Image 1: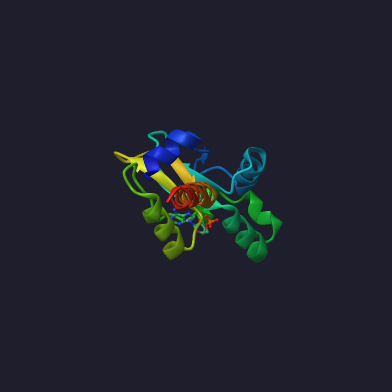
Image 2: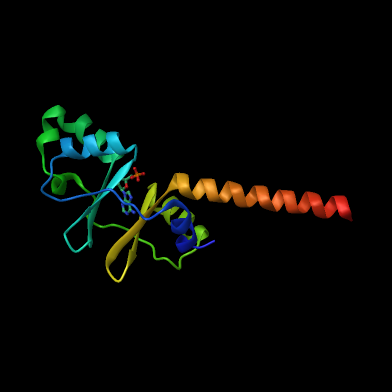
Length: 143
Ligand code: AMP
């Protein structure tokens, strides 16, 4: 299964923020949208960074609640690993495992076109395993 297929299924909506926004604004966005990360981008939809709930927890643990007024640019991860539409679900899983993160933006021609979370990957993987198991059961039953 490809990234394009997952996006067709789940949609292409990505919640984004800008570097000058505050952490407080991002926390509100994460909470209201029920997501674990936002992509930091500019008007041209190029990816400048990513900020996840884990970053927020780390900042609060180190600096306390006053850091909520800090700009996103100070605490985001600026070197973002991305995937393309043609990458496979196996590649995405390997990328997340090796990088120890749970979100991967999808980029095409330098522009953000979607995001895959570990939840999306696990859901499709479990469905694929279920279908395979069902097919094997039917094969055995008719043999
Ligand atoms: P997560 O597991 O997605 O909550 O992220 C864990 C850490 O990895 C945080 O510091 C994120 O900013 C960072 N991170 C998340 N996704 C990516 C990504 N695709 N590329 C690089 N860093 C990331």
